[in-house]
Image 1 (spheres, rainbow, N blue to C red):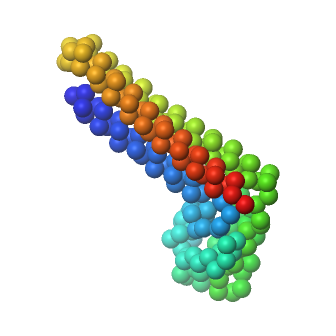
Image 2 (cartoon, helix red, strand yellow):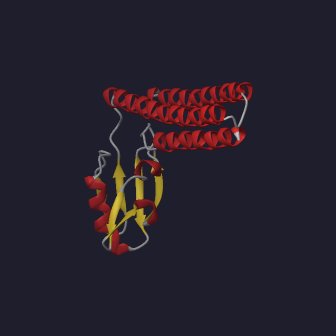
Length: 185
C-alpha cells in the first residue's frame, strides 16, 4: 500500500518536472525556436487552435522564424494571433509565409527571463511539495488505521523525502541550466 502511494507520488513529481521543462522551452534564449510559440492560440474557423497544428516552422537564422500555414486562408488569423501575443514578435506577411524577426535580447530582458525561469522553477517545486504532502497524508492515514506498522510508515516517509529531494534537485538543475543559457551572449 505504501509502495502504491510512493509510485503515484513519483509519477506526479515526474509530471511536474515535465511541465517545468515545457515551460522553460517557452522562455526565449538567443536563438528563436518554435517552442516559443507553443502557447499561441489562433482563432481557426471559430475554434481556438494551437499554432503548431496550423503551420510549419523554419529557422533560417538565429533570430528569424518562417511560419508557413498549411491552409493559406488561415494566414491572416495566424498573423493577428502573433501580433496579440506577448512575445514581442512583429510578424511580416509576404502572402504565403509569415516572417518573424525577434529583437536582440537586452541585458534587462535577459534578467526578466531569468526571473521568470526562477518563478516557474519555484512553481514546479511547490507542485512537487504538494504531491509529497498528499502522499505523506496517505501514509499517515495507513499507519493510523493500522493497515501498516509505524516502522513501515517511517520507512515510507524517508523514501518519500528522498523522492522529493531528487525531483526538487532536478528542477533546480533545470533552472540553473536555463539561467546559464540566458546569460550567454
